[in-house]
Amino acid sequence: MYQLDFNKPCHVYFCGIGGISMSGLAEILLSRGFKVSGSDMKESELTKHLAAQGAEVFIGQRSSNITDDIDLFVYTAAIGKDNPEWIAMTEMNIPYISRATLLGEIMRNFELPIAISGTHGKTTTTSMISEILLGADADPTLSIGGMLKSVGGNIRIGHSKYFVTEACEYTNSFLSFFPKISIILNIEEDHMDFFKDIDDIRNSFRKFAELLPSDGTLIINGDIDRLGTITANIKCPYITYGFSDDKDYYATDITYDELAHPSYVLHSPKGDSNVSLGVPGIHNVANSMAAVAWADVCGLDRAQVLASLESFKGTDRRFEKKGEIGGITIIDDYAHHPTEIKATLNAALRYPHKTLWVVFQPHTYTRTKAFLDDFADALSLADKIVLSDIYAAREKNTIGITSRDLMQKLIDAGKECYYFPTFDEIENFLLQNCSQSDLLITMGAGDIVKVGEHILGI
Image (tube, rainbow, N blue to C red; front, side, top):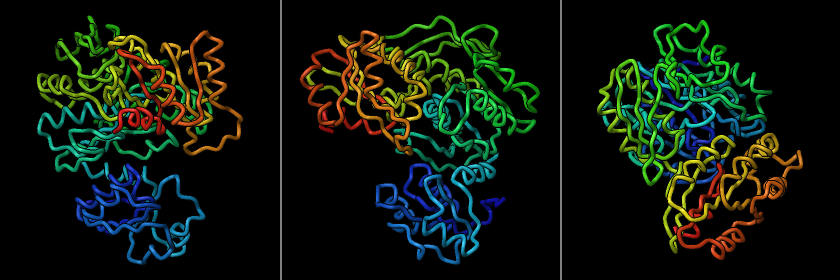
C-alpha cells in the first residue's frame, strides 16, 4: 500500500480533479508543498481555483497528460479501465490509489483525525463540528460534503492537529480511513446497489468502528438497532447519545421556536446544559448531541461549543432558505432517503405556512424501487406533492421504475400528487398554483434545486 508522507512531498496526479472531493484533496496537498496536476472533462470554478493555487490542470483526459515524473495517480469510481489516462498510468507502472484511500492517507498525517459517518446527517454534523473548531480558533483542516458559508466552500486548510471529514459507507470507502475519533450517527438501509441487506451495512459499520485505535473514541447513537453488534469488544471506549436516560448524553424538554429551531436540556457526564440550535428539526437535536460529546472528548469549552451551535445556520442544500416570491417561501433540501424526507418535512410542519408543497426528485432507480412504499409514506407529510423524473446519477434504468409509480402510490393513499417530465412544466404549474403564505420545498440529491432558483430568478 502506498503511504503518503507530508514530510516528503511528491507529484500527485488527480484523474477527475474537478470533483468536489477530489479538488479539495488536491488543495490540501498543494498547501503542503506537493506538486499537483490532474484532468477533468470540463473547466469549472473548482478547476480554475486549483490552477490559481498552482496546480497544472488539463481539460480533457488524454494519455499524453500522464508523464513519467508522476509519483502517484489518484482516481475516482467514475474512472473506467478504458480511460486513456488509466491505460497510460498502468503501462508506465505508476503507483495508484483511489480517492477514498488518499483521504485515509491524508488522515494519517494529522494527530487528531475525526470521521463522521452514518446513513444520514453526515454533512450537517461535520459542519457543526467545523463551526465549533472555528469558534475555538483551533485552525482545523476540514473536508465537508457540502458548502459551508463560513469557510466559503467545502475545504479549509489549517495547520493544527485537527482534521475533520465525512466518512461515507458507499462502496465501503470509509474502511480506508484512519480516524482517532469516529462518530456513527445512524445505520439504515441505503445504497442497495452495493450492499446486500441491512446486515451487510451493519457489518461495514462494525468494521469502521474496529478501525479505531485503543486510545481512540467512538461516539455512537445509542438508539441504533442492535447496537451491540457495533460496540461489543471494540478496542476503544465508546460514548452513546440519544433520547432516553440510559444514554451517556440525552435530551429532554425539547421545544421549538417559530422557525422550528429546537432548544433542549442536554444531560451529560460533564453536567447539564441548555442548548439552542440555529437549524430546524429534532434530527438536529441528535446531530448536536453527537457534536457536544465529541467536543467534550476533545476538552473544548462547553460555553463556546453551545454558542457555536446556536450561531450555526446550516450548510447549502440542508433546509436552506432560497428566498421568497409573491409571499411564497422557497426552501431547498438534499433529502433523498425516506428517513431524511420525514425529518425535513416534520421540521417544515413547524415552520410558518399555509400549504406545504414538496417538489421531489427521486435519486437513482435502485433506491426508488427499494423504498417505493417508504417514499410514499414520507412524502405524505406534505399537503401537495410534485414529482420530477428520477435522477439517474450513476445508473441506467434496467428495472423499469419511474416517478409515475411513486405518484400512483401517493394518489392511492389519498394525496394530491402531480408528475411532470420537465422542470419548465413543474415551474409553470407551481407559479399557477402556489399562493401567498405557502411553503415550497425542492427536495432531492440531484439538480431539483434549479426549479426554486429559476422561480426566484437566482
